[in-house]
Image (cartoon, rainbow, N blue to C red; front, top):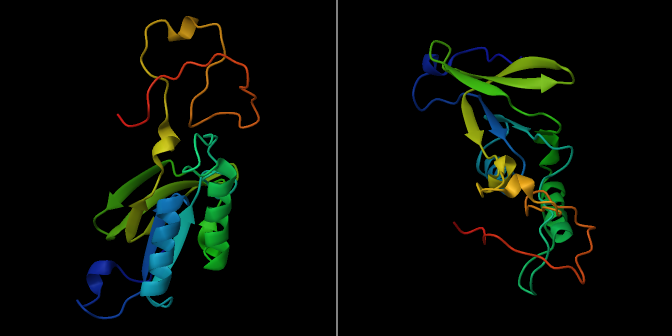
Length: 179
């Protein structure tokens, strides 16, 4: 657990003080947030930690290209990975670390955040907590009566095998992701 040597409320307003910022998620929002922190604040003023539940940079969703104006999954992944490398953001990311809870400690003036380290859950602390978890992290099947009885293969755009060959297959698309 990282514990600052002061609470936020002890320092005078408009005086320099080091703050710890924790970001949940290293996808598009988390990486952009890390970039903005890195290039808008002094490293001596802000300590940044990003917890990412996946083993690598996210962005490798299995969504297929449906036309020339959409990027493929590997292109999205490569863009995020290149961005993180180019701006030296990976040093702030801990992979395979799913945040399992956060509570505000008003007396200490900081968040207490539960994060597993290997098989042992630990608590981390921060002054500012950012939730940059992506919208596809909590996907679910639509509430369609009888869906569980369907005997064919069901695919979801958030969790699809990109190697699956759909050529010469009959495919039904339900929903367009906009609603």
